[in-house]
Image (cartoon, rainbow, N blue to C red; front, top):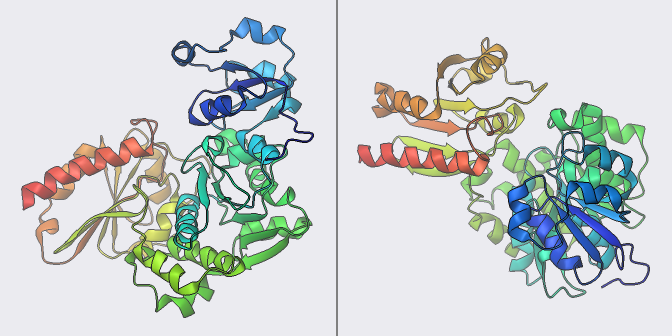
Length: 432
């Protein structure tokens, strides 16, 4: 553990946002500094009741550091004016992690595929007897990990929000899987979003390594305009072909997961992992909940739950490999999101749009594929299962990949995915 000149030791610190990462930050720092807590949700404040502080008192205290949860938008929160005034004091739990530990870390970001790539890489390290910790957006909050040794490796899934707020964090291995337009509501412009992702490379020093998608237009453009200290590897999905004959896992049929796999193999080579053990790890990987997850595959029907999809790009990676598919989508569409598949590529796909934002989705998709719209997800599935076509011998695929945020009707994508599974169970059980 690094102690010398630590910028968080003995300081007056405000932790803003009391979700999992905020609470973990408090527990980690409470005996090391003078820590105060605040959350916009007053009920959370009452539950914790330790060092919580009122809005009025915050204005009177001169904090040395402010640790902010990634989910907080400083332009739209209760402390907005205070945060803008004290912007240079804002840090994240990743900054705290970096300030206390010298450990090697592999940090993965990108618009799509972060969780899957991070999880497989973590599993591969564990299967090869490495002390790997999966933290960040997936796994545990970074500061909740115990018994850290010099050999501990952090595999970190980092969002654009985390990277945007981070000030001193850096990672020996940095990964940008891909970049497509996303979170523009928060970042305001695509340029800001790309810059947030590239903070991961910008912070690296000589002796570090970065892995980026070769065929990505936004990544290529950014690399041409800037110089970076790390050694940069451009990963190409087509290079995967020589290893595909060893991989029997159906999960890696889609282009998106082939892309994830390309990065894993490239990084594993650098880490000198045993290839036979790595392939074994890949073949036994079952996928993450609600991420291109096959929840039913029997007779003439396959059901895929991809509730995590919040953009067209994430859905396209699977759609282009499907035949006779019922694509169910809906939710809150992303600002500036574009659908890139041609009419020819969609000839065997029917779109079923649910929810309050049907018009927005129809406007983008109307000239590409056949569309039906419904009030909600329940009505959508009722129609699909009442269709005579679903009973025919020809194999059909129900692909639930919303391509929009879940907050119009659900708490989060997990809540949406669980709800979908429950309805599917009802219809599947009725058929059997």
